[in-house]
Image 1: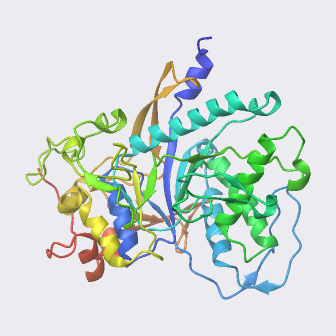
Image 2: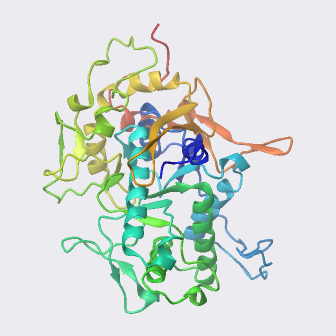
Amino acid sequence: MPPTQAEMENATRPLFFSLVIPGGKKQDVETCRTVLSAQVLNYPIPQLLPLATSPSQPRDEGLVNENGVDQEVTETQPPSPAALWVDSILKWLGRTPPEGEDGIVLLLDEPGVYFQLRPQVLLQRYYRILMEADESARATRMEDVKNRVRHSIVFPAATCRLVSDGEVRARCDATADRKSTSLGEGYMIGPVKDIRQLLTRTSVALKQDPSASVHNIFTTLYTRQLLHRQTSVDQSWFTFNQDPELGITLDTTSLLSTSIDPSNNSSSWKSLSTLPPEISESTPPYWTVFGSEPSLPHTATWSDVLLFHPSSQISLAPAMLFHPPSTTPAVQRTQTWKSLFYHPHARTLYTAAQHLPSTIVASISIFSSDGRTRLGERRFWNRKAKPDTAGAFNGGLKKGLQIGDALEEDFWPWRDMCGGEAEVEGVFGDGIGPWVGGRFY
C-alpha cells in the first residue's frame, strides 16, 4: 500500500537536533576536543551541562513522581553523582518548547567523544537501526506485542543477550573475548519525549536505590522490555503498572560508535576507495562556506582521508569514537586525537566552522517502514543557533539569565572555555598559540 499524504508529510517534517554533553566544563582538554570535533563537522552547537555537586539538599522536596503524585519529603543528604547526572539532563529536557518534543537528542555520557563523520551520516544510520529493529519485531514477535513496538532510542552495544537468574540481576553480556558491560555506556540517541520518559524512570529508580548505576538501571529497563516482548503474559505488575515498552534498541554493529581498544588488533586507521554510500555521498570532509582557505585540501573526498575502522574485514567507519576520560590514559586519547583527519587542519577548520550558518545541521532522505519507498527529505535544525561564533552553550544554567518568562542559556566563547595553555596544546598542538578566529576572504 503506498504511503498516504499525511504519512509523507509527517515523515519529512523538520526536526530539531541537539548535542548534549553532561560534565562538560571550562579549561578541560577533553571537553574542548569534543566541542571542536563536533563543530568542524557541523553538529549542533554543544549544550554542556556542568555537574557541580552540592554539599547537601533535600532529596525529594517539591518533586512529583512520574505518575504525578507528590513525593514525600525525606531527610537531607547529598545527591549521588548518578542522580546529579540524570537530574541535570531532565532539567535541560524540561525546557524543551512544545515544537521540540519530537526533536532528536544525542546525549553523551561525558566529554571524551571524538566525531569523525558528518551528522547526516549519524542520522541516516540512526533511522536505519530503528527501521531494521521494527522490521525484526514485526517478523518475530507475537501479534499482540509487535503492533505496539516502535523503536526510537538507540544505545551502543557490541552485542547484548539476556543473561539472567531473574529479572533483577539481568545484564548484557559482550562477546566471549570481551568483558561483560552494562547497557548504554557512551551515549544514547532518541526523541526528547522518549529520552525524558526513560530518564524519569531512571531517576525514580535512583531514589529507591541511590547506590545504583545509571547504566545498570538502563540494562534492567531494557531487560524488562525484552521479557515483556517474549511472553504473552501481562507483566505490568512488576513495573508498578508502567508499560515496559520503552522503544529501546541497540547498535550491535558499531554503525554509530565504537570504543577504541588498543588490544584489538583487527581495528585500524585506513583510507578506502569504496565506502558505504552514506559516507561517500555526505558533505566532503574539508568543505567550508568560503572554499578559499589556501591550506585546506578542498578537493579531497572521504576516500582520501584516514578513518578509524573497528574491523579490518569490513569498511564500516562509525560516526563517533569513544575514549572515556575517566578510564583511558591521556597518551592514548592524544594518539587517537592526532590521528583524526581534521587534526592537522583543526585551527583552519574551526575558523571556517565559526562562520557556518549554524541553523540546518543535516538533511537526509526518509523512507517508508519497509525501506522501499522514498518519502522525501527531512531537515534537522540546530535547536539553539548562534551564528558567527565558536564555543558551546552552558545548558546547565549555572549563570542563566532571566529574560521575561524565559531562561536564556549562557554561551561560553571558545577563548574563555578553551584558551588556556593546556587546552590550546591539547587541541591544536601546533605551537601557534590560542585560536583567535578570522576570515578568509
